Structures are given as structure tokens and as C-alpha cells.
Length: 171
Image (cartoon, rainbow, N blue to C red; front, side, top):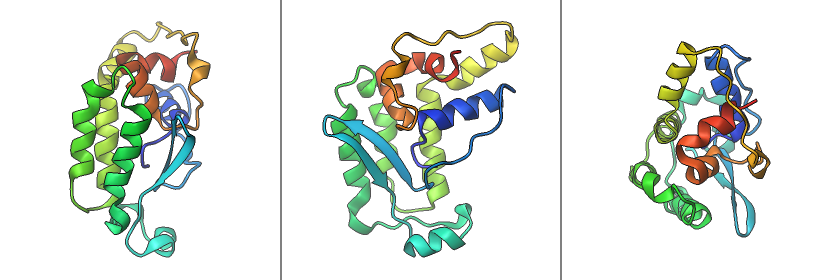
């Protein structure tokens, strides 16, 4: 999925820890919703062959299109929406590098963004610690309702950095 939602990551991580089922994908794998001063914005990644190919081609075979300079447009939208958040500048380079890459497969783009998200949120370390300490519970922060579950989880990451795990796994 392209820049998955908070709900998606919450379900994914709970599944990895044996606390629930794997998430369903409520939005198409080529779309993400971000928030900025202007409200919600949907970012859509173009694939070669358009919507018809998206419906009839396995995810691993979908190739990205460079139509409309979408990489630049998406990175500008993300920078405009989240550039002033506390952790953006610490994580910016990893994401900017991904958006600077030439066309390839959609699955590779999604995997790179997922890896940058997980690394930035320090999720591998948190998951390992939680597996070693299953009796521990994470508390949901008081401001958790500030982050709607359908919004891309990068907003949470750029806002809370390593505390992201508390928002994703807190009860």
C-alpha cells in the first residue's frame, strides 16, 4: 500500500504481535490521504495502463508511470503538509531519497516507504521488545484522537517520531 493509514499500521502491527488479524486494505493500493492546512488531500500514484491495469494485474507486476511529474507533486504536498512538524527534518532525507528515484514497480515504492516508516518509528526495536515482554501494555496517549485513523501514518511519524508505537499499539 502507498503511504498506509494509521488504521492499517495499527492492524498490521497487532497482527505481527499476535494481537489481531491482518488488516484489510480499505483504500486502493495507489492512494493515500494526507492532511494539511487546506484539509485532507488524496495522493494517487499513476500506474502504467491506468485503472484498467490496476484491476487486472497482480500488485507485484504493476509498473509506475511518470505521468504528470507525480513524484515531485507528492513530495511537495508532503513537505507542505508536514514540513513544520517536529520530526520531519530528522526523517526527511530518507523519504526524499525515495521520491527522487526513477520509475519502477509500485510494490518496490511501497516497500521502500514502509521500510522508511518502520525505521523512523523504530518499530522493529519496539516489536522485539514487546515480544520479549508480552506482559507489558502500551498506553494510548491522551492526544491520540488528534490523529484520525484513515490518514496516512506518516503524519503520526512526523509528529511523534519514536513515540509512534504508542499511538499504533496503545490500548
